[in-house]
Length: 167
Image (spheres, rainbow, N blue to C red):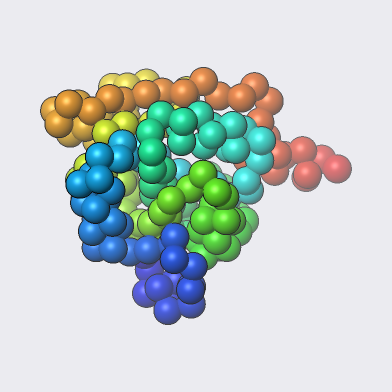
């Protein structure tokens, strides 16, 4: 989590790397199955919600790695992206009942976060093949599973931004 987000948020579900690692260890000791996914989640839409619902159904706890603003900018999603700042995006995700933890990460990939969380299930959207999913090898080596979920046709943030621009 960036320093700014850490000092501004009071939401218990938005946490830093050390806090989520501790919480995951507690959940694991209780026998909970931990699911991890990551992304920008710039404008939350139906595609995101259905994806997160499906991911959450694969376990007992859902942890989301959220790309920081600078991380999103490095992904070349466009000069205006993200449209919503990282704390706003984190608060929207944390408000969903099915989300147990949100961690903002600034790296180009969530590898460090995946190592810390040690998920039982690693999930990405259907536009990611298992071979391209960062951390897949680590999760599988621990006996976990890696899933690429089908995208909801017609719903993407990029398409939504284009639709808004066209009026």
